[in-house]
Amino acid sequence: MSILKVARMGHPVLRERARPLDEAEITTPRIQRLIDDMFETMHDSQGIGLAGPQVHESIRLFVAGVDDDDEAMSPVVIINPEVSQIGTAVEEDWEGCLSIPDIRGRVSRAVDIRIRALDRYGKPVAMTANGFPARVIQHETDHLDGVLFFDRMTSFESLSFLEEYSRFHTRHTE
Image (cartoon, rainbow, N blue to C red; front, side, top):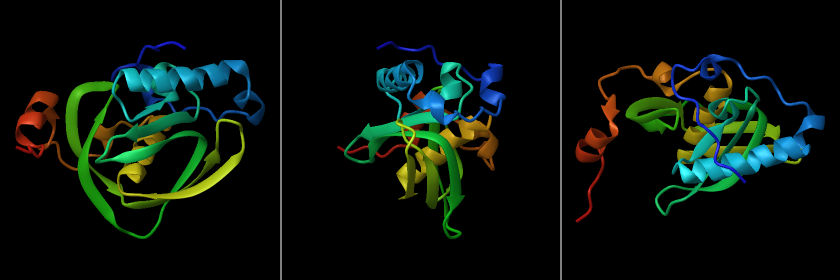
């Protein structure tokens, strides 16, 4: 496995709508290796999600997952997602992005979503997600549409460098 180079804000690949993966492509050694490399890159970067365009692959694929006690999300591979909101509840919370290092901002997202997609083997999957996993899925799906979290912010007042975010906007336990 390999650590992949992460595209940073300003690279055109982050603003393109990624192409759907053909079902025949999904099980090829190239795509299976890419999925493994994306997980390794995500973990190496201490991320919780990584989309194809972020590693210079303009395809509708993302990986996500975290084993943090506060925000657990089982590892998933999502290909060609279709996401829809359940209900009307939205919540504003902090987000960051591996393609926009050291910056955080508050973004409104649907609390509950439904997702239909293909898994890493090309099999159809349907699931619901709420809270933190729903936020991650929406963030990564946005990458597949050329949308960055800045684009979803209703105000830039919360925009913070990571150091200031850590000093002023996170809960400290003593």
